[in-house]
Amino acid sequence: MLRICAELERERPGEPEGQRRERFETLLDLMQQLQDLGHPPKELAGDTPPGFNLDLPGGVSGEQCRLM
View 1 (cartoon, rainbow, N blue to C red):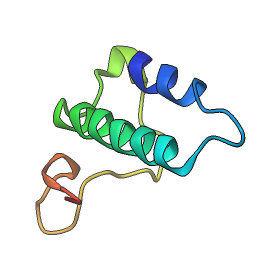
View 2: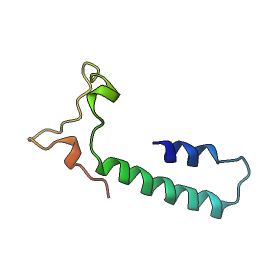
View 3: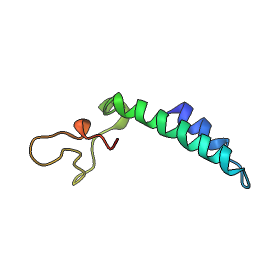
View 4: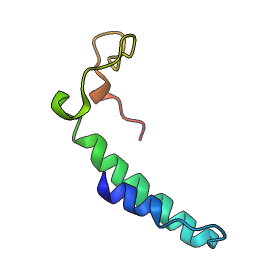
């Protein structure tokens, strides 16, 4: 998470398109790595709010869902 936040904080108004595209690719890669680790432990994330369900219907969990 620290690497994602640090990358986002580097963004400046008026950056060239190429630099923005490179940052997007870096962020996408970092977020995919984070997703591969699964859900954070309850000790860090706390309890799931009522009505917020990450499990998909049909017995497939949210950890098995991949967008790419």
